[in-house]
Structure formats: structure tokens, C-alpha cells
Image 1 (cartoon, one colour):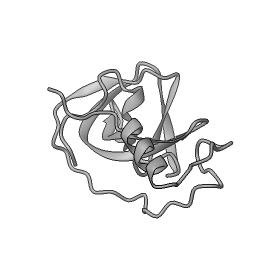
Image 2 (cartoon, helix red, strand yellow; image 1 turned 90 degrees about the vertical axis):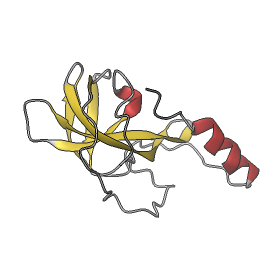
Image 3 (tube, one colour; image 1 turned 60 degrees about the vertical axis):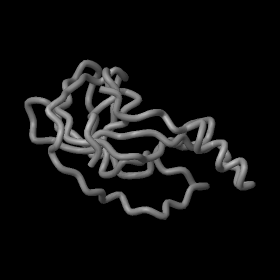
Image 4 (cartoon, one colour; image 1 turned 45 degrees about the vertical axis):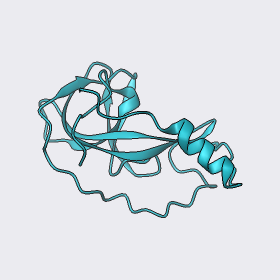
Length: 130
């Protein structure tokens, strides 16, 4: 089931069209030039029976679906994540801000839950929106 699309190019085009230019940040977790207008607490519920694995060397488990939200720990490559649902968020990279999707889930064999960037999940995360 196709659940969502990467919206970075659309968001980038919209931001450029509005005259807003986002500069790259030196920090990927809490950039000084980004003032988040949204709190990191997001509604989530267990609506998805899927799972996947972490494809990055280490993937942050965050409070919310944004790289500026606090990380409560990390999941190593190959770690299984049980999916609950997904939402839209953003990631700050060396190239600026990318709009993308994030999955709320639980690390297999633990009670550790949080938001994981879908870019680094084997099958791009949950298929049910939060």
C-alpha cells in the first residue's frame, strides 16, 4: 500500500516561491536559525500492524516528528520497530529543511516508544496516518 510521498521538493518550491530562503544549519538537532512554531508533543495511536528495521547506523527516537525535538535514545542498524502511525514533520540537513514523514513506533523487545524518521526505516514506516 502506498501511503505517502516525499514532499521536500514541493515544500522547497513553495518556500522559494514565497521569497523565504532557508539557510543550511551547522547543527542537525537544534539549529540556531530555525525557530520552531510547533510543540514536539503530537497525537499518536496504534493504528498500524506493520514493522520495519532501521537502515541507518543509528536512528534517533524523538519526542516529536522534527529533528529539533529531543532525542530520548537511539536504535542501531537492523533494530526492529513496530509501527503505530505516521505524521508529517521536517528534518534539518546540511542542505536546509526537508519536509518528510515520521513514524511513531516502539522498539521491539522494549517499552521504548517515539518518533522515527521514515527516511531511515526499511519500508518507509507506517501506512496509517496518526
